[in-house]
Image 1 (cartoon, helix red, strand yellow):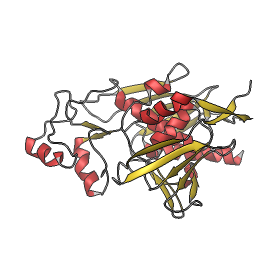
Image 2 (tube, rainbow, N blue to C red):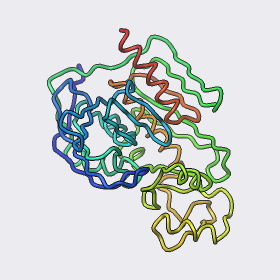
Image 3 (tube, one colour):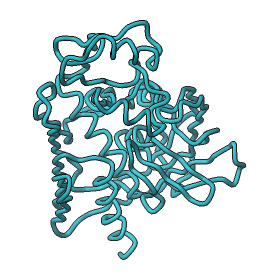
Image 4 (cartoon, rainbow, N blue to C red):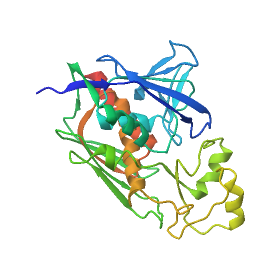
Length: 305
């Protein structure tokens, strides 16, 4: 039986702030016809300000993935794109009145919860998959990151992270046909190390970051005066390092939540290939840069075939 394309059943509206810009944004997701793919429309720039969610338009991957075509720019879209990938949404139009997709709780859970209540609409068109005839190995010698893609009859991911962190340790995550994306991957939040905060602030990033949308890992004890100084940035009365190494006694949703979030990011970035993938993916120390570089390689295979 041939798989069919799917779109959303309903229109969904989300309001929140951008993680890096800190700007309030309203985003509307709605159904789209078969063959439409995923497209973003910047309503603040006009009805014709549309960009396809394809790796062809990736311009930067610093702390998130950004698409850009002319004046149209969309950033931090990976959690939303992972939602479409994980739930099997082939076609949708996303209208947004600012550059950055809202961070919400730092995961894909709000999107997934909304869509799963209604289910998807099957469309009268076959789904086209990307399949592989041979193994692809891509390694970044500078970072030590590596992604291997092997031919398979379904999509699966084995992923490992290693930040040389005593708090995180070496974490693994896995997605295969038995994984419930909505329950096991979508709820996993973005994370940042405490020592990265100051450089990010200086680079005019994470203006919308707070303790409700990110896991903050504190590798070593920090003087209280430094925590107090940063409390104002996070819009909270006080900051404290928990013995487990997380800020403000954060409760993890999974013991390996950070590795699962990296898997979420990979699914979002790989969706920019423009079609679902049938392959076994093995990822070591992956991030947006290597994810999108590999997505470009796969995209070329599609275009050339």
